[in-house]
Image (cartoon, rainbow, N blue to C red):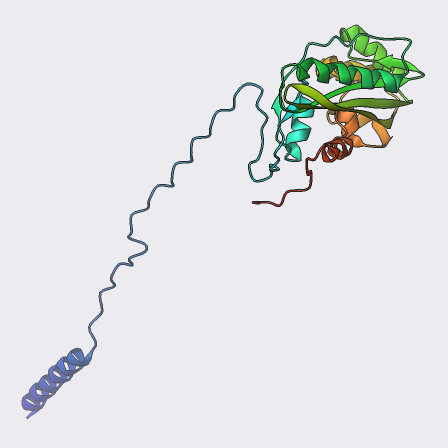
Length: 267
């Protein structure tokens, strides 16, 4: 009796287990996601940039103004090229070899204008059609005109002279309108900015000279460079001190029919 009951219970247990096993839902196999299994594509290779030609400015095509007149910059100054490119004015570079000789008898503003005009005239002879832009920057302290230093000793003397004082930076600008191989119009103007230096120690001057920055700048300093650390303030156009008064240039270009206005991004 006991054996029969035990055997029946075992059969019932196995039957119940099979019933439960049959009733269990089989485990679904997870299919791999089509996203995670897709082979990763390498990023597209960047477009090969066009090589700039010697003297060609770095211009953003989406910021360049669309003008009908050819504009020629009669200057080899990289600062002036950068400033024009910064505001999107399209131009060509035509350096001139005009000696920046001193003229003690000339008033400083008249001297800056005369030198700018000489540069523009030197390039205008090679331009049949277009606007030729010339510029020259001088530094004036106590009626003494400071051009570019001849060497490191000359630069040191200039910086000592400017230390702790206010001086003037004058940029003369000349614009010659050339049509059919002749000069139709000539505009000449200048801009003046007051710059005040903090007192420079001999250690400051020596450290600045070691950067090499002063040797090709009027007054032996660059306001956009290391010298900015020792400049107390300015009164007037900052870009004039860099080398080109942009507002004055834009005004002169507008007078010659060039619509210089801010260009929208992508436009």
